Length: 168
Image 1 (cartoon, one colour):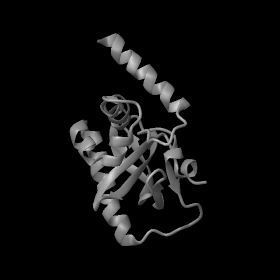
Image 2: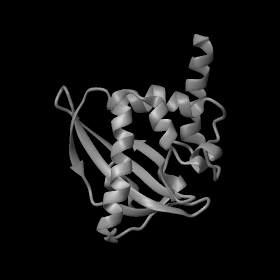
Image 3: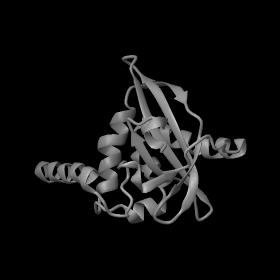
């Protein structure tokens, strides 16, 4: 079983670097999403509404609640995940939850920016944020909240990324 998990991790890591398809890769390169360059303002009502969803998703990861986080994921992201069955659970358990371990308090919430998933043009808002961990270091991430079929969902979560990494 351990060898199988190691093979899945290796496959997942290689896919992150080698993927060139139009399918979505959770926690993969930003190429799956578009962002408006420049200083496009997001209406405050959207910032509040979409930001609350991003907050709940991060809170689930801080608690280590993979089931709650997965329930918030975009059905389109789940459907288009190209690495096969179990990949999303593996990413949540082995990348997302460990990344948020030691979370102490939020630090930076950058200006939200309009975004969309390129393959199907589902619109949303991206948030570039950071937080402090127990050792005093700061961790950065970008979370994408999409409005899909009338519901706000998490389209993607990029770890160790800043706003400057996703603007083009």
